[in-house]
Image (tube, rainbow, N blue to C red; front, side, top):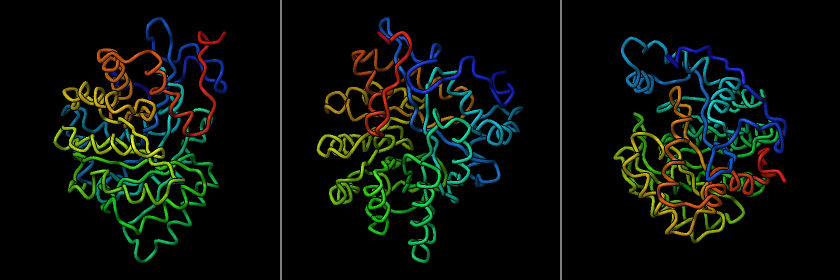
Length: 344
């Protein structure tokens, strides 16, 4: 079975820089191959995963293979294995998130993420985070450590997950994060919408992106990427998506990400989501991400479903090119990925 393969996969062809060596990369659309960047990937360890989240993960695996989840987290979420996952899906590059949410999904420290992306910094990019569970006592120190990690490890972004970290989206105590993001030119990815993960807050103040508007307005130099586009994963509904689209439409420093909307549990809302994105005029604000690798094969299946959805709804090749890679490279100030059959 697929999830019993060796944990470290060798790429058939490696990527050399952005412009060449990507013969097997990309997805076929209307006779062209479009590059793909997955901006939403996770790492971690079984030891850093809290008990309730461990149970949720193992509940998704057939009874005889539940033991594999610990092996998967320890051996399939390192840098080499993430690269293998990207190779399997034809994805040129990906962003790996740090996060400190000990009560919900667990801990992936900045140093741990830095170690994983160092495997191939041309293809893997790190997002820093910080702990907020003792903010009133050590908030300034956490900000200092996060800023140091960004500088030391060359992190390209910041990751916050208010619902997982159990802090309101409008909590002014985190404005220091946005100040650092603006000053360093480091985009912030924020989990918006709900999550089915145990312990995650689902009240509107923790998941409705409208609660971020004051911060967005006060820090125009900070780029806010609204993760999941406000998708209400707990109820499998687009409860807060219109609020996310509205912010992206009105503010030049707001972008969207569709992580988990290509997952099987969201298939009944995917077309509606893509139609709302187009109707809102924010295709140039949507940056592709999967929220993987949750399980073996997830990164590939999410991309397949999302690509099929865009084609079925009627997105043009140029619109898909923007979403799958070009919006990321523009926002993060990187050169476009040029696949071999795109060169002239």
